View 1 (cartoon, rainbow, N blue to C red):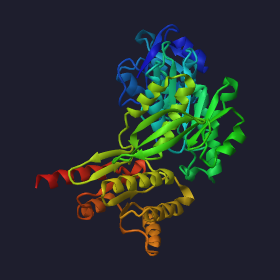
View 2 (spheres, rainbow, N blue to C red; view 1 turned 30 degrees about the vertical axis):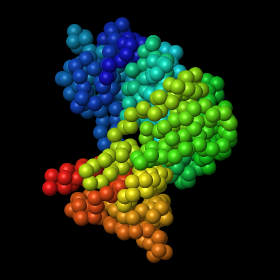
View 3 (cartoon, helix red, strand yellow; view 1 turned 90 degrees about the vertical axis):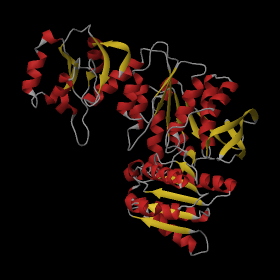
View 4 (cartoon, one colour; view 1 turned 180 degrees about the vertical axis):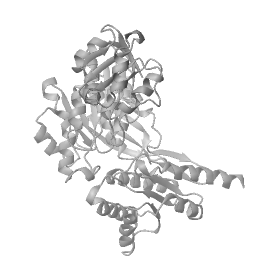
Length: 487
């Protein structure tokens, strides 16, 4: 990817504590790549080590494809002596080569030092649910008044955020970043890379329980986002309706701004009803003063929290109310995130990008809202929720019970863990709550029977963890609808 403002090799070495092994200190790094599969001529290659690969193995490939140079770890010199010795002395070729201690630290330090050259306001958003949606809303609203750069898609890791930083330039007013995690000490590292000034935690749920002992530990990990706030005199936005918020306030000790539903906290909302696609309208308040009325562009009551948070952040930065209203009402929904698709025979709620207990329950609520308003049968097709550790079976069971309690008419569970959805659903069904249920070990088995289960007029929710690739089910449903219409 292109760097907005070129970086001189000497400056890159200074920022990262690296040594210049080849090239002129005043030569410039103009674009970077961490993947030789997509590398372009002139890119500067940064080889990253992963769990199952080492980017250093592809240094020669990067050069063959026209890389302007690369950085390598000092400890790797003995593993690639012939290649490194020959290329570092080939000054006529003009390769820009640096030697560093750790390439992951290199890209983080390079990005962090690049960013502090500019005066952009830095906003970081994390949370167990809703962080991508909120980030998109904040960026959409801020863009109406300010030059805004944001992390694209789910570029929420060290590499994704670092790469996104290089889109910032002297004209940038705000940089908005989504911060993701899988374990401890990750959010704090990301917050330090961007030196966050305004931070937000959407909510704390059971996501990533595989890597934590309790929800309290998850809250502590999310709270790491506040680490730079004291020195930056920043603010932390917190969900007043989240049970972990008092604890986060206690352990961070920073200035906070709270958002939530129907009360007199800093920013709050009262819903005023939903349309047939489950998109709510709501009144936005600052404490007890009504600011404006907004019609959500995204289905689901849970998205009111994301919209309230986005509005609160943007109002705090000085965006006009009319711009906030327009930005939130017209925000673009990312693919597979609470999209309502009207097919010929039925309606699909595509929320299959990812899944956690909190997000699945919210999607079930939306399914019921849409089903009731459209007088259709509610069908939930649910895949495994991953990264839940020892609590996985219990959490799947609870979601299954919730489906029955919400009177889902048909539950279709697919995946090894998903069998526990059915167990929870059955237990409620035996108490005369709930409807039909089906279980399939894999998607192939499901597809073979799905056409005989769904009916015209059904409202069908499809949701599962990213690794489940539940969008395959949506493709099948769309094709099924097309074939039915043809006959």
